[in-house]
Length: 107
Image (cartoon, rainbow, N blue to C red; front, side, top):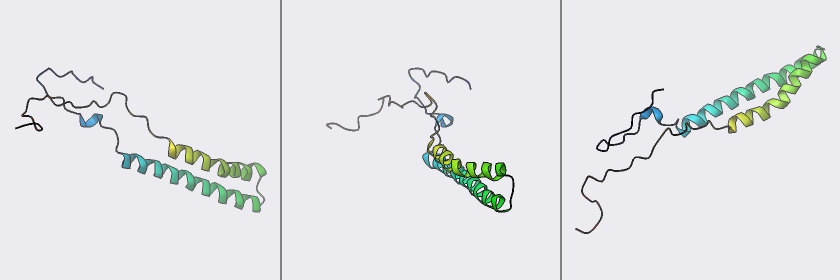
């Protein structure tokens, strides 16, 4: 990523759109999708463990599916609560230059 050039004294500071962080709604939607996918896998593991146990499958098969069905809710919650790290120094405050007429004050 190229380094942004420093503005001169007379140039206004403009916030780059590419340095704006992902919106909160987009981030939450991503985390919800990841949670639902993990819980869907958990449901498949649970049903698979029940079916393989009743059909007389090897104990390691239904045991592995059972362990996965028990541990996946924890993994899903931890992943859903994990917030993506913000890019350091990605945005800077824009300070007005003060070259316009005063907006507040005595007339």
